[in-house]
Image (cartoon, rainbow, N blue to C red):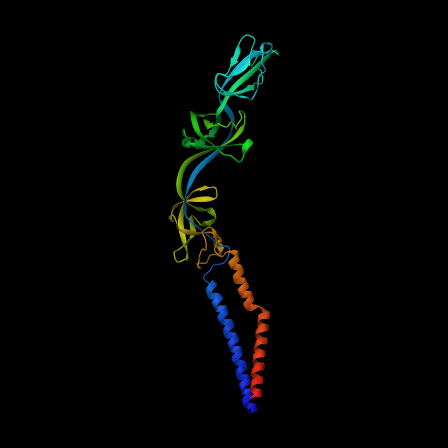
Length: 335
């Protein structure tokens, strides 16, 4: 083979190989670009509009008092059998036996020792005990005047006390005074709650939360709101997975959620987090309440990009090209 022909063939083969490598790398890059281009930036979270119970609340504190009590004043020298304090008794059970009579429980309750006060005159030889029915607890509280129009009998009440912070006890408003105290500017209100397990002791300080204006409404996380002047917007995700800025009318805030009065329907999808990353791009959600691009998929994308742009891959491609070129040159020389 002529030398000029051999050189021309080598050059042609070299450019052919380089062209194949460039086209191959471009096709691979376009494949991954096309595959992931419709996915929005990581960190965006989509959720659904759902119905939720909302209520407005007023909180205060009060002291637990038993449903009913009965006091007994006895002389110590009359006591024949010891008194078991803090013992649960049934109606008709023996509290203690005295020399002249038996002391019988008038109702179900617990026997406690009552502290003497200045208004109770007893001698050192006397003992004052009390039978307390704590199956029901009352709490008397003062509600500020501004809430008085919302306070009605049988409104639901949540009760907590320091003895069991993890548990919420349910109660109701039993009664109100019906008038505003002119000095306190408040409405005297009595709360009633069941205490069947006798968890709450008389005298306990209780945290009272009265719920009013209760209703079931559409809700979204409050992190999804965008405020612009006196208007409120959210990013609504269409069926074609496109985000659209949508005006909404909001209502009550409650525990991280906001009531939607109008502007959305139940089942609509909205962007809950990552609002600043939304620019009317595709908003495909892999799962409700989950990042649009899970971490594992992010890693796959990054790994693919790293693979394509890895210098080692470039070197190996070049070496492979030179190897093929050398083999081609050897074949031509042999020919």
